[in-house]
Length: 102
Image 1: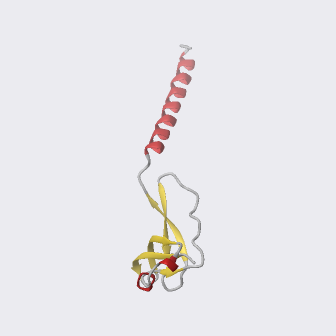
Image 2 (image 1 turned 45 degrees about the horizontal axis):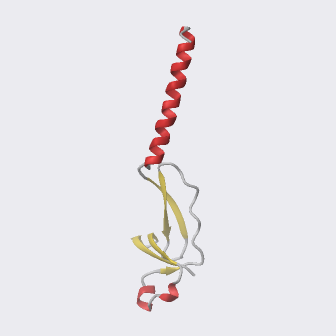
Image 3 (image 1 turned 180 degrees about the vertical axis):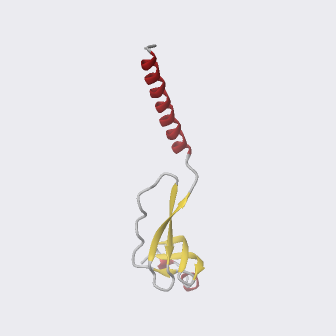
C-alpha cells in the first residue's frame, strides 16, 4: 500500500508532496506523518500549459488530480513559434497568389 505525504490545506484537503511505495521501510514515526491509500491514480493526459497536482482527503483517503497553470516548456514555445511561422508563410503565399506575384 503506497503512503502519501502531504501539505495540509484544510481538514479535508492536502496537496501530495511525496508518494512512498515501500512504507514498510519507514519508521513508525515517519509513517505517522502520512496516509496509506489503496492505489495512487494515474495522472490525466498532459495538457499544454497545465500541470496535474495530486490531492488527498486525509480523513477518507480519497485522491484526485487538479489542473494548475504552468509556464510553457522551451519545446512547447518552439512548437508554437513554428506553427505561427507556417501560418504566416501560408498567408504571405496566399496574398502573393491573389496579387499575381506568383
